[in-house]
Length: 153
Length: 131
Image 1 (cartoon, rainbow over the protein chains, first blue to last red):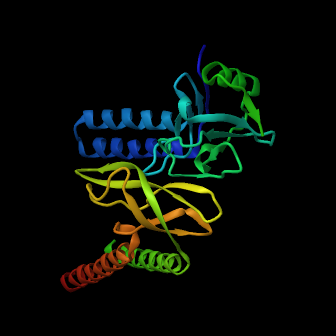
Image 2: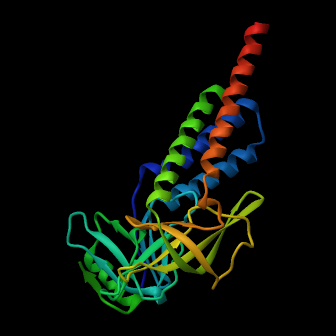
Image 3: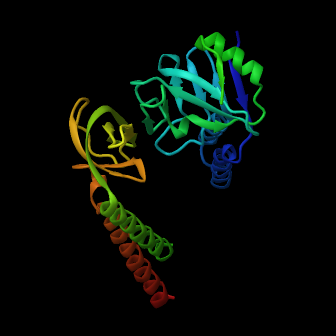
């Protein structure tokens, strides 16, 4: 089964391309080494492509395409740390990845709070609007890869 | 350019000092356990950002990464640490002995800002005198 992936152009996805354009202009203006511009373009395209990711659910876990920060990569949670995945009924719907009690703080997440009155742990970086999410396809991917149902919240 | 960047740095430094001062006034103390050490490589240097787990008086458990790093080797997993947290936002923590527990960041920013202003004024004066 293919991973469930949502990609969308976002304003900050174009920032690396602007940087690359500046470097290309510098290379052309000062007759600098062409490979420098080629490397900048490749790097910028890679960063821009990464920044278009909104959500990916695959056999390894769930990656949420939060806006990248200087110190934190996009949040990724392995299935072994996930208690459940929920999608709200709001417009736009929001996805929330809830952690198991005692799960280590996932990559790209800088804080989480565990409330003993609930079974799971919530973290603000693991909740994000996903406009245009296909509820049925997402539920199928969560069930197939995570072995549990997509919760409605 | 120095004269333009300098005042901005001074402003940011003052804002940082005020935020830190407010945090120090309202923060609560707790003892936490280091659960992870995250390493951030910036160029040739690297900084450790400990992740700490601690309990709040209402029974909730918080796990949070320090916002300010320190040189490697200042702590390891399983260590107990004294920390301060903001009761309004308990994921905002400062760990005693790490850079984030003092005013150094804001003071350094103000110092660099003042130096930039002085350099800008100095360079501008030289240009005026020559031109």
